[in-house]
Image 1: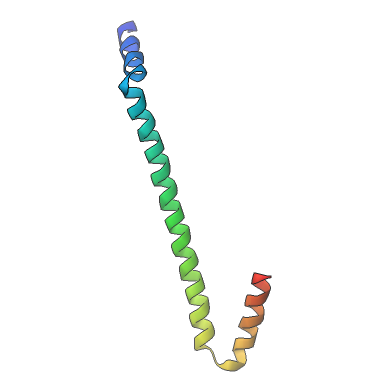
Image 2: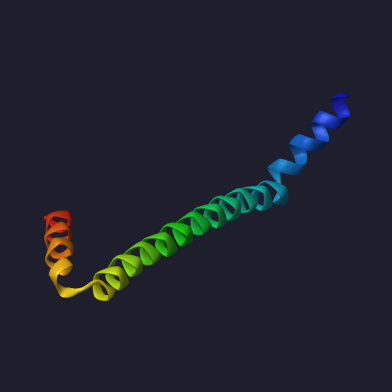
Length: 74
């Protein structure tokens, strides 16, 4: 039991600690990178749908979209 704990502590004190730290950082950045990508794609899809629907609607409805969009930006 104590030998196991000692070996584990030794492993983390040497090169193992750096590798473990690197793995933690990699996992964190990989996860946050996926979240950022998902948010970016979602925003792109939402804006694209908004623009396409505003373009596809007749001109008399476009003024309502313009007002909504200008309020959103303000």
